[in-house]
Length: 191
Image (cartoon, rainbow, N blue to C red; front, side, top):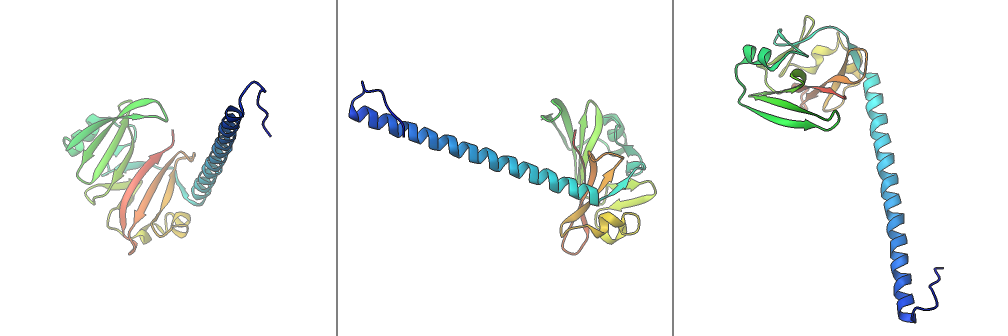
């Protein structure tokens, strides 16, 4: 029970008590929202960690169309694919840096510090070479079963992932349609 100073009128005391009760309820609601957010965040991180542990790890060389590698510059990219249809400057909040996205028909290439960091491919005009293995839009997801058995056996209805390198911060996210055809290949990284 909340007590009010005796100098207040009964009406003022009642109003003050109502305001204090409302404030306490808002504080409790905010605590619940924060708790839900924390639980949801940990759940997502746990699922991402489990998914990454179930994926295969590729430690070889990744090239786009056999030539463009991570770390290459926009000049390397435009020498191979020509000028993009458009570009966009973006701010990467996680690393607090500006970046540039180069948009091509069927692909997006993300540069930070003038280095290729990630991409999204949706056209068979762009192919991913993992050493001598070629990952291509339109191919069956079954093509990865021999080289990446864990990623293949742990695939979901919408695709799978292949971890790149020895850390969990870079991976290929391979999306598929209901028929099992590869529809998108995205290189993601967690800075």
